[in-house]
Image (cartoon, rainbow, N blue to C red; front, side, top):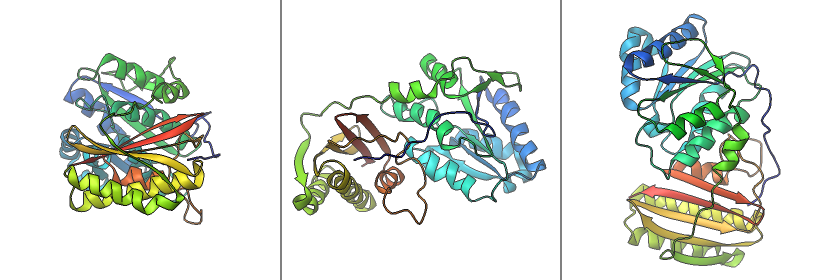
Length: 317
């Protein structure tokens, strides 16, 4: 898999991306409600994508004003962090009139996110800055500093150019802001799983690779739409490997913690950190493979290196 298009980090203006640190429900409402109401009063489109409990807090506190806000449960819409930029943030922002500022509250990290999910979450928060660089938008990201581990809060300082501390509405510059470093640090190797079914494929065996994945997925407990999603993801990833990744690759499928996991490794070099995390223009040919996988899988992790690319995706049984 390969891509030569990169989205550089750089000056964000007019994009604004603060982290909101909170300790309790009152901190949360004090930081989010004025943000929403100021946007509505200014005639700006407003979306709120946060976990269900916090979504209910904001919705109830807004009262009748909630009808004017796009409300999304991030536990569903953003279960896969790789889906949030194209399927939530950019989907909302791109639907608005050109030049109009949009306001979004996005809370992709909550207590209970697994260690397997977290690297994709941290990369997501870093890559927002590249995906929205130069766009007229404000994305406020709440962090529960009482419940989240210290390293998660530390990463928030690195992925947000400004922060808002509990009990304050003032943005302060983050001296630790370094999103490129976060993207690189969580570009972690994905170690092989010895017991996984393994199938080496090339252009002649693409159809068989899909059948292998579907057969193993069914044996491991996937049914219905989830099995169809596994088939589609396998077809997209293996085709990418043949077209862009040196003409061949290795497919692996196994069960893990209530999921069926599908992995494709090849010798392609994926240069673009935002690959699969940005919408693709309608008139662009290709470039939708990993994006499509992000939209259908419950989790996607990538490892990019000079010697090859690994894409691993999880489907709940």
